[in-house]
Each structure stands twice: as C-alpha cells, then as structure tokens.
Length: 207
Length: 207
DNA sequence: AATCAAACATTCATGTATGTATGTATAAGA
DNA sequence: TCTTATACATACATACATGAATGTTTGATT
Image 1: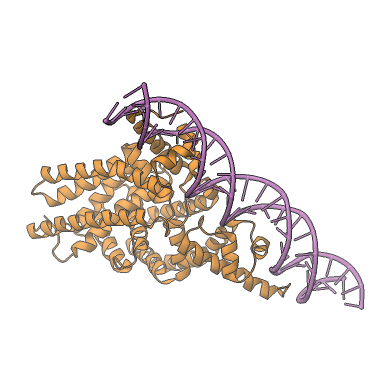
Image 2: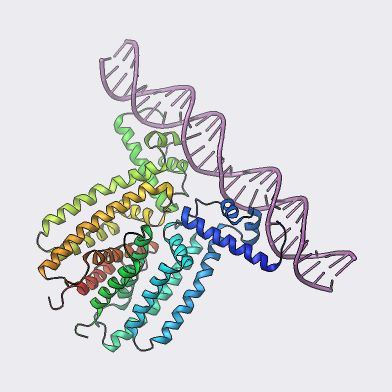
C-alpha cells in the first residue's frame, strides 16, 4: 500500500522483475504492457516507474540478474582446466547448456532474448550488450583453440575464429530450436553429442 | 485512387508484400503498423485490409512467397545426388545457406522470423508452420544419415536424429548470429567450414 | 518530535493501433 | 449497355499504452 522499509522496497523490485521475466517469457516483450507487469506483481504502474525508467530499463535489470552468476562460473572453469584447452572449451559450453536447461532465470532470459524480443532500434542497447558479451566470449575461446593447435590436439590448418563461430552456432542453434519446442529433444543430450561430433571433427586425426 | 484491372490489383498486392517485408525486417513486426506498411506501398490502410485479413495473414503471405522456391530446390538436389547421402546432406545445407545469403526475400524472411517477430500466442500459426517445416526437413535428413550409416560412411553408434538436430543447430545458429551482425563473419565461409568440421566428426574414421 | 524524502497509488492527457463500416469509381460480365 | 462486384479510400468507434503530474503514506534522519 504505502511506503515501507528499504528491504520491503527491494522485495517489491524483485517481485516486479520476477513478474516481468514470467510475462515477457510467456507473452512476449512488446505484447506485455507495464500495467500487466505491475498487476502480476500486485502493485500499480506507479511502482514500476519508480523502480525502472521504462521497459528497456526493466529488461536491462533482468539481464543484470543472470550475467553475474555466468561470469563466476566461467572464472572457476578457467582455473580448473589450466592446461587442457579443448577440454575447457567443452566444459564451458556444456556448463552454459546446463544452466540454460536448469536455471529458470537463465532459461527465461535466453528465451526472452531469443524468441520474445524483437531485435529493433529501440532495443539496440540490449542487443549490443548481448553481442559484445558474445564476442568477448568468442575471443576467449579463439585463444583456447589456438592453444590447442599449439599443443597439436587441433588440426593446424583450421581458422581458429571460424572454428569457434561455428561451434557457438551449434550451441546457439540448439538453444534456439530447443526453446521453440522443449519437448522435441533433450537439450543436454543433443548438446553433448553434437559438441563431441564437432570437436572430433576439428581434432587432429589420431590424436 | 480507384478500382483498377486485376493485374493492377496484383501489383498492389505485391507492393504491399514488398513494403511489409522491408519494414518488418527493418523495424520489427509488432513495431510496424498496418498504416506504415500501407504508406510505404503508396496506398491507404483500406488496401491492406482488402488484400489481407490482418497482420498475421500478411506474414503468412510473406512465407508463401519463399516456401515454393525452397521446395523446388530441395527436389532438384534429391535427384542429383541419388546415392551419396552425406554429400546430399552437405549440398542441401549449403544450398539453403547460399539462398539466405543471396536471395533478398529469403534473407528478409529468415531475419523476420528470427529476430523481428516475437514467438507468442498470436503468432502461433506462423511458428507452427515454421516448426512443422523444420521437422519435416529433419525427418528427411535423418533418413539420409541412416542411409549413410548403412553404407558405412557414418559411425554406426551415432543416433541419427540427434546427429541431424545438432547439424541443423549449427546452420540455424550461424543464421541467427550472422543476421545479428552480417559484418562479423562471412556466412558461406563459416557454414562451409563448420559443416565440414561436423561431417568429419560423424564420419567413420578412415572412411 | 519534526521534517524530509522514499515508496508507492491515482489520475489524466496524449498518441496510436485496430477493425469495421461506408463511400465511390471503375473493370468485367451478361 | 446495364449491372454487379472489385479495388480501393475515407471516416469512425474502440481500446490501450505510455509518461508525467500529482497525491499520500510512512520510514529515516536530526
């Protein structure tokens, strides 16, 4: 009803984020009004516009919630597999796959960015962030492939960047298609087998 | 201005489709109003509602325009490579890639379905059609893989369906990422190398 | 205890999209 | 030639969504 403690305000904010995440993921971003989000969170539009500037700011906040856990995960893996670049590559991919399949927040967000949000001028800041994150990740993986080539475990004649781009394509494509119909195939199983097929294809013969 | 000949009406219809394709692809489906489409085509909204029931019907008509050529292409390839299933698989994929890269209509449509159209309840018929087309295509490719396994050119322990799903993931993922930023990499080059990596991975060793 | 500012609720003005109903000029058919 | 249906244009009713402006209640501060 009224002004509450700071903790209560944070609760309200989180409930707004949860409601937005659910509605956006279910009904699409542009098909969901701020009022619907507010109602689903049990507040009025006034509450939303107090916590967020507009819909874009809301999406931005949604992304903020999951990007941090992902970053942590990545750093851990880097330490674990210091000298096995190909193995690290594999683990990194499968880890993200695992998250998309099992973490509801992650899954909803990928779903939103993938299928529930039009890539238009208004949402450019959102997608630029998406892109820059991806490119950064690609750059890191390119280094891993180069490392693997130096070790002789990956065929030397392959272009590292193209190799990574296709590998990411495979993972992203599986996300894309799986989210279209999560009953059609099991994500983790497909990712594991697909990734292994691909990695086998870029490995040096007999290595 | 006024009523014209049947040929003129068909021209109007095509101009409406062209305008819709361009605007949807540029500004997104839900972000483009029927009036904007009409204006871009040099007519009023009355013309649109005469030719199409609503926005969905418009999208439906857009899909109709490209689905026919794609089907033709597929049938041709089937005849060409009767007894080389793996080769046929490769050619089929690369052919679609080639179309996406070079046919403006095809590219715009994939772009629309991929990035400019929210996958929500309203657009369900559109996406169901998308899905059924994909699944049909997967089924055909599964047969090709089984054929290849029977010939001994593909490892027998692989699940044919999963194998195809991942391969399609690779292609779709490349489409998805390429359309996000067509400058970042060359689609055809990436598809060729990625697909060859993958096919090498599923081929029987030493075959 | 008094004041201030945060955390909302409420209201309103505005713009815009949609669908439909109606009007009209003309091509096509008889 | 007359009629009719087509191919649009115009106008209108309805429905939302947005953002801002304003109001109100309380926690926090001093």
